[in-house]
Length: 435
Image (cartoon, rainbow, N blue to C red; front, side, top):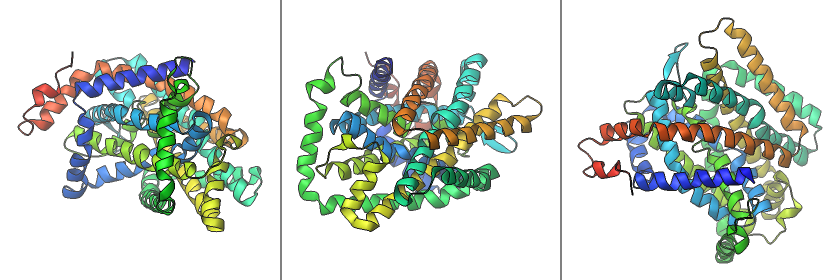
């Protein structure tokens, strides 16, 4: 009940802020094209790949399947709505993340804890937020990614979970614990393959069943606007489930992505903000939608499944044995890519916490141990129980971060004026609050 109410409050704030800035988030594609294609900014591209690795995870596949299982087809519509409005939070937080980053050990580090401390001059709140973000990327959010890997391997190959746990420990040691350069290189190679591959396969499935699409969209809109979906007592159904799964999938407004985007070396902070907004649309509007359509095309009872098993079943029904193994590949790579990026995210916030402390190696060792605990939790618990923990973590981070964004809106306004100076005639109207 409380989680649903807080999610609705997040949405209302996103609507108000979007109207205030005249839906500036829709300029993201135009501005991102300039940075990545015309300017060919390498560091921005690398940050974009790492952020996509974090975005494009189980939220796009298992998150959608659980949304359909517990919220019905209409949950997809409310995911779209929430993503469109909340993407303005991504623009704000990633811009502020660039403005307040700093160099630690010859690498750019930043994030919500940095702009809370420097922008709001509130070291205590920054400490609390950073502490919870470290927990989120070890024992709150990470277990759902690990659970996806574990369940997928177990359902596909029947491998014992203890062996899966050992394999994940080895992967963590040889890839994740080797440092930032290894993480960036891993994400640069993995993300384009998994994102483009998943897009192509799901589009082909949809096209092969295009005759059913009118019925699927009718079902989505009919269920989205049913009385049960919109009633005040339906905090566990359609609309709220869609909102929560959208928030988990793209994390706009949670203050997680600024940690990653801060690694980019760019002349205007707002540019990185626009790039991150594109990530929101790629994540939720494109990939999440394709997953939902692939599931809904087939007349099955989603409530008979728990998450990964629904995706594996649908792909196998569509593409036979090839579908079974290609769905395993996507589930595995999406989850692994997120686990890798989450380690970097949590480590950056840990470095903020211990920046002026001695024995940093001891703290980093303890962080790695906590990260391994998250892997153990993910392997040994159910998808539904882990999502309950995830939703709690989302609310805690969102409350702190959105409060900071609203308090720092004047700083964001100044950055807008600096970026568009001389190039946007209605800039005064753009930053003028709506009545």
